[in-house]
Image 1 (tube, rainbow, N blue to C red):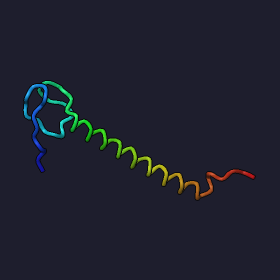
Image 2: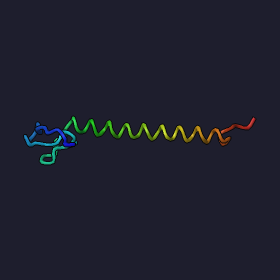
Image 3: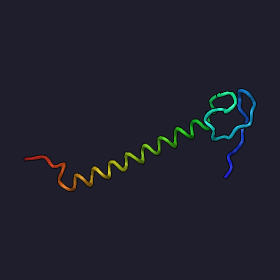
Image 4: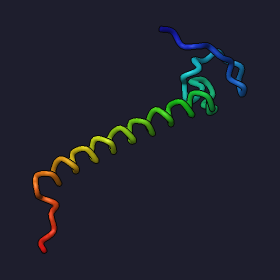
Length: 68
């Protein structure tokens, strides 16, 4: 699958829409930067969900019980 092509608003070069910065002038490509940010944020959310599941499994084994 090829990336959508767009024009850098700073230098006018054709760049991939998924690029976070223009490879020619370094100007921030907001669309690509936002997508990369959201992808990383979703990865963190998935990692946290995995930690929650592992913690619940360990708690169920009795490791997290408080003495009465």
